[in-house]
Length: 421
Ligand SMILES: *[C@@H]1O[C@H](CO)[C@@H](O)[C@H](O)[C@H]1NC(C)=O
Ligand SMILES: *[C@@H]1O[C@H](CO)[C@@H](O)[C@H](O)[C@H]1NC(C)=O
Ligand SMILES: *[C@@H]1O[C@H](CO)[C@@H](O)[C@H](O)[C@H]1NC(C)=O
Ligand SMILES: *[C@@H]1O[C@H](CO)[C@@H](O)[C@H](O)[C@H]1NC(C)=O
Ligand SMILES: *[C@@H]1O[C@H](CO)[C@@H](O)[C@H](O)[C@H]1NC(C)=O
Image 1: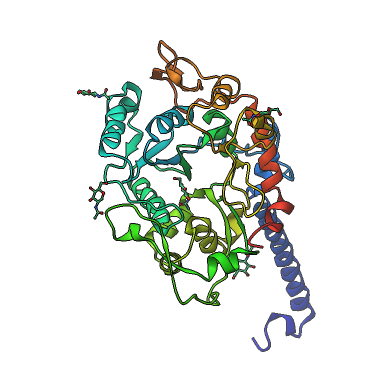
Image 2: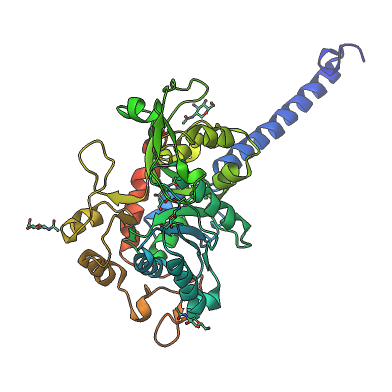
């Protein structure tokens, strides 16, 4: 047929061709319409957030009649993978923090660095091994091959990545990695945190960051340091070598807080290293002062796959010194109001057995017998000596504070505007 159906000569054929055209156009339009509605029903961060503060039973905002019949699936309880680390003399504080943070659904890796005496490290292992609940649930692990960790040195990042790698090898599928030290403490219960995080997209990374290096450009990015922790048995301070180096131009530097919550995807990206960027940056940061305040920031903001997943917050309340923001004030009872107002799930840093911790235990965590924070999972007598249903959450008032924080952080406008700037 010469010229195809639309160019045929007879009137009859023309009419037929026109109807065929109309019908195909109609069918095509329906498909396009269905397609866009399907696309718009893909859960977005906003629809997750619209459920955050409500009871989660209402229809998601923007659901059209076409997509409404399927109720959103109940959010699954996520699993948090914690690293809690300490040094010489931190055993008691670490043990206390572990109890305040404990939930049978999570994973915990504990690390006392090589500077702490072997007796202290053995005692930690024994405490975990002999603990009736920890040994029954089996979700608390001690890194027995301890690392030498230098304050401000790259060995700190190596230690964090080591814990990440250990956690990736655990069979349990976790969702976020959270890095804490023995002098950190939670301000919310794990039920509150798990409840809030269950409504978040799992790919979010909480990494506080900025590209405005300020004084750090001269004091951090240019000097070259060596960390003896990489090759010496005994602990000694980092030292500076000359000449200094130029600022990099192959990637952009970012700096920020050493405290973070990383998605499993991003941790796999950093540990498995199928892309060379995390490895190259690890080597670059080996000679960088305070690499824990820059390594993950620079990796995530220079990775096109992950730069849109970063939330510019470290989930901590920290009372910094007036610039240069290098030494956090020790928190006391006087800071309780500010801590709570911040809506942050964690705070630092606390002195061992400070009265502020007792107040947090009593008023915010409602610590029970056996020093566990009561939650939906607790059973047995005394309460929380056994695990009932570990997926049952009973969030308290703090979950509303957390929801407010998440709304502020992850809501469309603030979320994108603060990314990698
Ligand atoms: C742990 O249990 C072992 C025996 O099972 C015991 O020898 C040891 O003293 C206990 N350690 C602690 C810290 O309770
Ligand atoms: C390392 O420290 C230990 C204990 O403080 C000491 O006995 C040893 O001599 C030190 N080793 C070196 C190489 O300095
Ligand atoms: C991880 O946790 C430790 C606490 O021991 C902290 O000092 C360190 O800077 C944190 N961050 C990173 C990126 O390693
Ligand atoms: C992420 O990386 C891509 C590709 O380099 C870039 O176009 C985009 O602007 C980046 N986004 C952010 C938030 O930095
Ligand atoms: C708390 O505040 C009171 C009164 O402002 C002050 O006297 C006290 O020293 C403060 N305590 C601490 C630990 O900072």
